[in-house]
Length: 193
Image (spheres, rainbow, N blue to C red):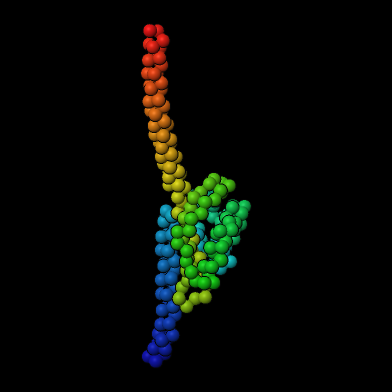
């Protein structure tokens, strides 16, 4: 009877260990999902065919596109092909085959729902050791407002330079006019004498 109990415990130990591992994996997955969804930076997780397997709330809010129109769909088909951008295709083409990453890739593009966006993309392959599944993480930073402010600053600097130039020209012209008026006065005085 003791031997029978020992065998039962021996059989249950691997099952219990596997159950603990599954619970730990599920918990880690829930934590990861919570972290990704909390991050303010838009994130996409793409499978090897570049279909979206994960999109956080920040992505959905920034591009005004819900999970039903995002998850499971090819990135390049999102929002009626708005993401079918040749430069983005070229960047993604090297990530998985070459196990590379791209940092600070600048992209300006007109999106139908949200208009012109200036974006900085960081892209890298993500995978778990020992698993053949490969995914791509696409992190997006919106620099539209910063680019607009920089453009406004540049415009105001140009206008200031034009103002200074015009002021300088007006000053020089005024000096010439003063000389002409002075000589005109002298000529009028000579003519009246």
